[in-house]
Image (cartoon, rainbow over all chains, first blue to last red; front, side):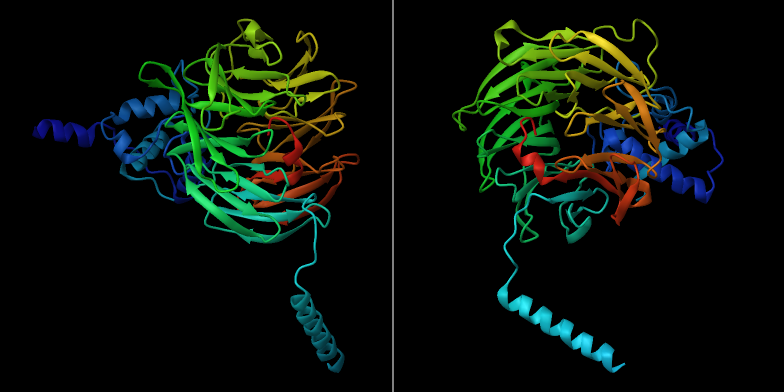
Length: 101
Length: 391
């Protein structure tokens, strides 16, 4: 059980936090541009909801991979042109905790 | 100083007089509203004076909000993402009624006779019909395309006969529901193709087109001969080439027919597709700056204005329908989300979300005529939509 918990905590390699200015850009990108499918309040639209409750049972690495590489067969595009992997990790961590306004 | 006091007094007297006689009678033909998506407000605007005259709040989550107008062009029905349906009086500049009709909505439409307002919903998937006067629920059509499976509904458009056409994103079908008896709608189903993402009805109300995301092509249903079923046009326009990632779904509405041709966004390509509106054969393509989101014909059909998905959403291009060429490229502002022509098309209003501004351009000279402040503006909707089929 403890191992599982530890795994949960350390599943993501510790990444450098984006700068404060970049964090603002990422928040804007998620709310506005991801929001065009997932909803500005992230409660879902053509794409699924991205709220802590809906993401709780999903592994963070999988979510990061979806952001970076997209999801074939669905409208979810890959965002690697605009996001570095550690930025996607930061976004996933924030989504799972409750995304800032 | 004395003069200043004098003019102030005069102004006060004028105000008092105006208050006594009440607001002068006026029509609504030059009025409209701008959605302020982030703050749940709408700004009411006048296209003759090119100014805002009121602002109304408390409208909930207005990301992806859309608006239809009552038949008398006095009331705006605003469909919010959160399932809110609000009725706003343009003349008295106030909210008349507001209901929460679903968990997650995407837009709506109003019937030919103006009596029924219909909302299209993602959750629960389906459409719901409301009395346009009272917003009382009349009936609903769940989008249950297979036992226990419900689809998100897209592309709802009113069509003649108090019917509504719409497409099922998950179900891959076009449905047409007849609300002749508003409490007992009758629905016909037509297989359409993979993942329809939006739809439109041509301005004469005859053809319903559903853009497909899951395959290259557009599904076309002739509403004058629905028994023939939906067929595909512009099939395989990508011809096996790899699609670009799509960072925003294009939007279809009935403006895209002009000069005898339909002008449609290509999915995952920097192109506008052109088809003959009689034969529906492809007649050409126009290379543009990015992936088109809105491809909108001016009221006279001479120009097509195009805006683009992220990351090219700072650009707007204008296609001349006679030459089929891009004749103007503009940079109105950051994150251009929507464009709306004045009723006869001398000007176009453009929302630039990240600049918090609405820009007004002359459609002949492409000169900027003015601008208005708005908080993260998205959709712009003028009352002239009241008289159009498919809106």
